[in-house]
Structure formats: C-alpha cells, structure tokens
Image (cartoon, rainbow, N blue to C red; front, side, top):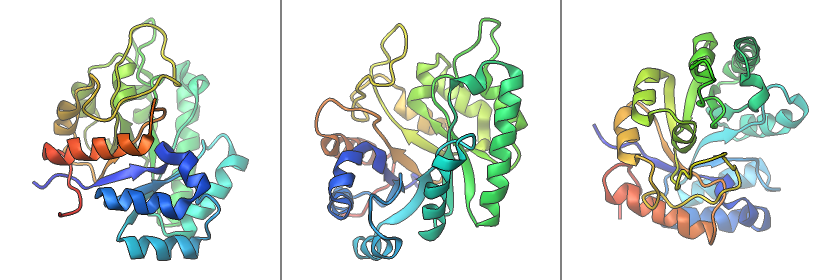
Length: 258
C-alpha cells in the first residue's frame, strides 16, 4: 500500500498567510507538499485562490472550522469551504464540552447536526481532538471514547501529538478508533511532564518524542497526513520543510516526485 499523500495545515504559517497568502502557498508547493488544509482565505477571493492553487498543482484537502457551538464564528469559514469546493472540513470544541458524559453527549449532538449540514453540501465533517478529549478522568473514563460512540456520520481527524499529550497510548488509541480515524495531523514535540500549555512550542516532525512511525502504522486507512505546528520557536517554514523531509524521507508520507 502506498504511503498517504502529505499536506500542510496553513495555521502553521498563519502570520505569513495574513501578509501574503499567494506567496505562502508558493513556498509550501516548492517544498513538495501536495495539498493544503485551510483556515480561511486570508483576504483572497475564492476564484483567485483556486486559480493560484491550480497553477501550483496543490489540492484543497480540507478546511478548519470553529465549533458548532459558535455559529457566528463558524459560518464565514463554512461558507468559504463550500465556495472553494472543499470535500472535507474539521471542527473542534473546548474543554467544557468533555467534562462529563452528559456534556460529551451534547457535544456529539452538535457535531452530528453540523455533519448532516455539511453532508448536504458535499463535505465530510471530521472532529479534531486536543488533549482534553484524551485525558482520562479521575474514574478512568476517557471522554474521546464516549464521544465517538455518540457520533453519527462524523469521523475523526486524529491529532497525534494531543492524543499522546493526554496520556493515552498513541498507537493503541488509533487502533481502537479504527476506521473512524479518517486523517492524521502529524505533529511532534517534547511532551513535557506537568500541566499542558497550548502555547508550548512544538518541534518539526522527527525532532520530538512522539511515536510518529507507530502512529502512522496504526492508521493505514487515512486519506492524508497533514503536518501542523500550533507554535514553533523559529521560522515555521523551516519546520514545515524539515517535517516534509522527515516524513517523505522515511517513506511514511508521499510527496511530490522529484
């Protein structure tokens, strides 16, 4: 089975995209990435964006949305995703939605409603985890497993760094979730002990301690590997390129033929 293709999450280079989205896409394509995952269009019109992607031979692999509990924030991103013909989008929700089984059930209901709307527009909705879904409660229960049991037609975009940061065994969790995992955010870091800080700089893939190869082997069914860094202490383009080189160089992901 060939390795899944590799894409870049624009959130990694969001500041550069705000300054010059066209040039940002050009740099990503030059590295060898085959696709991009969007967080809005950074002021570019849908028509200009699609024309530029066509010139660069890049694919829109997905779009990031706000949570279904934030309809005013979600709506403009959703409409842009529809306008550019995205066939996959992902959403997320904050910690309060995973504090109890009752809260989890309500969160799943909201995601299912958004998923049904997205399906009508030709979009598959995925849920993007952070660490609060994968951190076991005091009684040992895991919110993520309660959540997926309530989903209907919504898949999982598994962020492998946050799965590991929550304290779960990464390959085992991906194996247990099985075909629900439709895509991976391939992300690395140091996983320091103590309270989790979302502003903690991450590393390029291969420079941290996350079991990258184990995670990828546990989810062979995914459609794309998407590299992402929430924060990076340095030039995020350097981190994207180093991540690309690691994943394609080790045969874990498939990039542009040289």
